[in-house]
Length: 214
Image 1 (tube, rainbow, N blue to C red):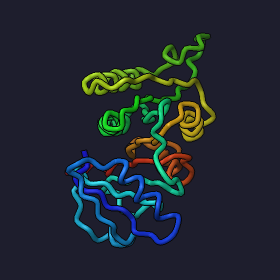
Image 2: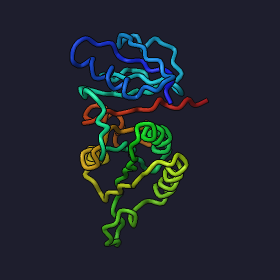
Image 3: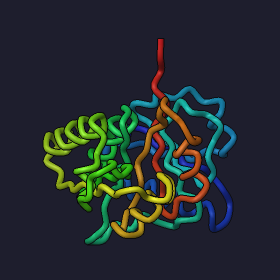
Image 4: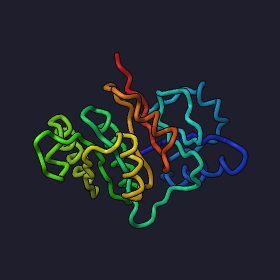
């Protein structure tokens, strides 16, 4: 999955979490290299096969980052999951491609989370009945990704959460998420949800590298 993992070399308790978490994600062929946090800004990285595990979000957006904050370890016991939020765009699909593979490697299920507006005149309390057509198409794609990898999954469709950000936070507690996997979207109406989550996520947050456009 990741051939190379860089780990922020930080002295003290804040630095032990990234090292331990990187070890939890390590596969037999994975190389783990400790580096000073600032050095990552100058490294040439192949985001397809590398991950930077750190308690502090770097400036770069062209690499995959697992933001641990002050979390000492991934909680991988029975009942945990990988949480992948999705909307109407492609960011949820991108996050799912990696999130599902991670879940398979960690032997965890995936929860695909979405919050939707209530449709006028629809009294149903089932979130699927209020789902936007574009979000429904995304959900179908996510279902295919999980089925292809043979990973157990469920959908958590909430109706009119206070905000997307708040809904993800609540879902992470309710679903006992081991980590949240997100990608930055291009259709941003109320600020970057990834940036908001990076400031307050209660569990490790994996942020995908931005796609290179030509």
